[in-house]
Image 1 (tube, rainbow, N blue to C red):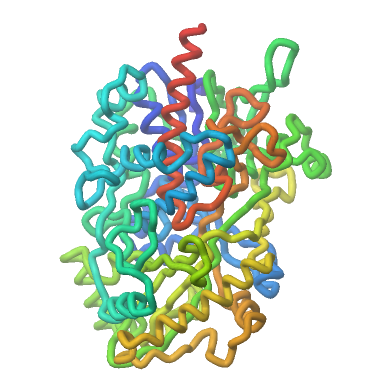
Image 2 (image 1 turned 90 degrees about the vertical axis):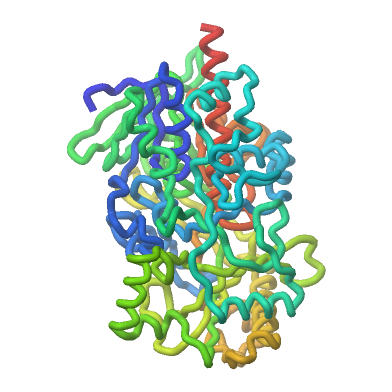
Amino acid sequence: MSETTFDYIIIGGGTAGCLLANRLSADASKRVLLIEAGRKDDYHWIHIPVGYLYCIGNPRTDWLYNTEPDAGLNGRSLRYPRGKTLGGCSSINGMIYMRGQARDYDQWGQLVGDATWGWEHSLPYFMLHEDHHKGANAVHGARGVAPKLMQKDGSLYRDLLRHHNAGGEWRVEKQRLRWDVLDAFAQAAVQAGIPATDDFNCGNNEGVGYFEVNQKAGWRWNTAKAFLRPTCYGRPNFELWNSAQVAKLLLEPASATSPLRCTGVQVWDGHSMVDATAKAEVILCAGAVGSPQILQLSGLGPAQRLQTLGIAVHKDLPGVGENLQDHLQIRAVFKVQNTTTLNTQVQSLWGKARIGLEYAFKRTGPMSMAPSQLGAFTRSDPDQPYPNLEYHVQPLSLDAFGQPLHSFNAITASVCNLNPTSLGTVHIRTARFEDAPAIAPNYLSTDADRKIAADSLRLTRRIVAQPALQKYRPEEFKPGVQFQTDAELAKLAGDIATTIFHPVGTTKMGRADDALAVVDARLKVHGVAGLRVVDAGVMPLITSGNTNSPTLMIAEKAAQWIMEDAAVSATKG
């Protein structure tokens, strides 16, 4: 840390931060610092797909957050994993590649007043970094095939990426295993009226099929592998500080001639505080929990709340930490017969050895599997205008994440409301950067969400009752057939539901007249020069699916805007 002045400082070496580091350091004239609070991604369980079991809840790779006791969950508190290592959540997540629905992005464009957030304009930014196993086509990108955004147009951004042969870093593959009972569940879903699909990522994800995953040859493919190694490590203008936690942003007060400006960061390196200066921009990529925490610690947030903690207010931004949205999955478990599931495969030493040997020699089998293999998107009732439910179906069951698998054969059909109306908060408890913030998702706090929870459980039962599954004699183990009314099922959802780790919205983008908007359509913090937020927190509405890949798209757009703004500043200078 001998040199502490940079052009760009990126806070958070996770999903967005790794991509931004790659793109911004492509300009050799700019010095880029990436700061990650966790360690490097050299822990072996990060890279073995089933290793998420050993990364979540592990202080080596997880921030170890918990939610506040939640009335909608009948007073329960949930474990709330967030990646604390290079690659961030892409190093510990379920590896599912999912963009969401076209309408998600069209709604963003309408809400923020900028049509470039719409699906048509966002799709090329997904395709730019995508390396799809099927190859390039109208909706997918692939390594070695120049996407639309790489076509030469004279802009600095495109010329730099072309020069560095960028694009196609984010590998998307088919899963390397299948299960007869999951094939039967897919057939049952079709019998229940859900169409089969082989691609969830064309803009309308309605259908049932196996998820595609961010893996490469049976290994997890995280953003550190995709965007940092070896590209950034070989660039003399790139620097990485890991095991270094940002305590607060450094702010220069407004004057008669200049606005309030972010000029750098204060970082705890494990021994002392170090100040780092950014000549151009500080880019906050600490996620939907970490970014609002850092903003609030820096005096950017709801003024009254900060004042009660003794924090000097630099800018009253009431929306910082508000608008938290997340996907809550309701886990229905069904005992099955006439087949084996992972539950019983791992009960014996021979079963475990066979699984280990298959992965060692073939990179296939249960050790290569994502937490969920089969997916389905459908409607909680026929009157819904679009698919509003997502299923994650697994050939296993357990009482709760981190608990042992059941001793009997079973499958789990988890279902979540894609577009919850319940909103939560992330707020600091103290002025100490070491203290975890209070995370209050407020799950199932609206009548609409409770009704969809009840309807989704009924739909699960209807799918399982179809002829395709009957040879397995499915028997509902959880929640139990004795629960039938809306009130009973909504309460049961509160008892058994868990997060699938998709927090967004806590630093949402929006128009200047939106009192709760934290950033504008180009992700600049309202009223603070030199500062952007680029992570899932900027989503005004949660996407209709898993949130990792949409976050990469957001970062891809931001990289272009940051380069364009720098070019304009250089011209003026």
